[in-house]
Amino acid sequence: MCGSIPAAATNGQTGVGAKPEMPKLHPTGFFGMSKQQLSQWGLLWHSTDRLDGTVQHLLFGDDGLPLIFHRRREARAYATQRFGYIKTRPDLRRLPHGWRMPMPVKLTGIVYES
Image (cartoon, rainbow, N blue to C red; front, side, top):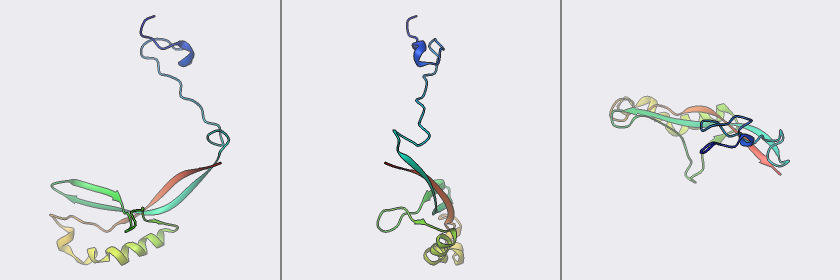
């Protein structure tokens, strides 16, 4: 059949709309590498204004790396120390700025080791 995907690559399905089979990963990761799931805490900036709508992004330090903390309380303490003035500034909380205090968020990633 012209324009079809071979049956071997699609788990026996043929035709134009057949989905190709995704390769299966070994339980330990790629090619025998061990994997470890890590959970840390970061700070999420969020603001709302008429021009950009709702803006959310992770905060980065002066060195250009994301701010990552081991515990949620460390992230909250940093946010209060660095951005605590936002709580007492109604002019920054309303339009045109719409700033809010950064929120601690859980960051989860997988690290592969050989």
